[in-house]
Image 1 (cartoon, one colour):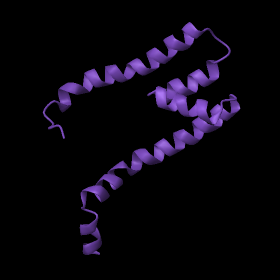
Image 2 (cartoon, helix red, strand yellow; image 1 turned 45 degrees about the vertical axis):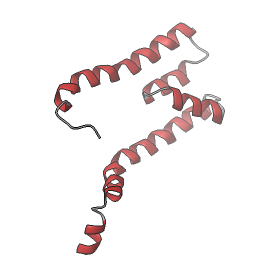
Image 3 (tube, helix red, strand yellow; image 1 turned 180 degrees about the vertical axis):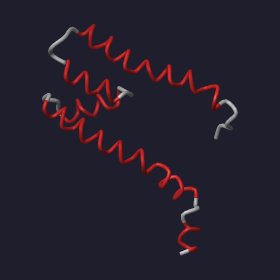
Length: 103
């Protein structure tokens, strides 16, 4: 048992274990977005491009619902505002992580 735990201390294994919670939620979101994009009539390429271009999953979901019902300007503003919140998160968290060393 101790040998198995020591094996898990390898940086790669530790990284896999550390990433497991976010990986599960990412998988669930991907399944949800896949269903929504199929219902919206997107092709696999269009869905993949949307995932590649947009950082915010909420922007992906909202655009897939708004596309074809609103103007292009509304789509851009919606995407910008939903993605801009990440800038605010970064600005508010930066004082707390400045002491961390970069790797």
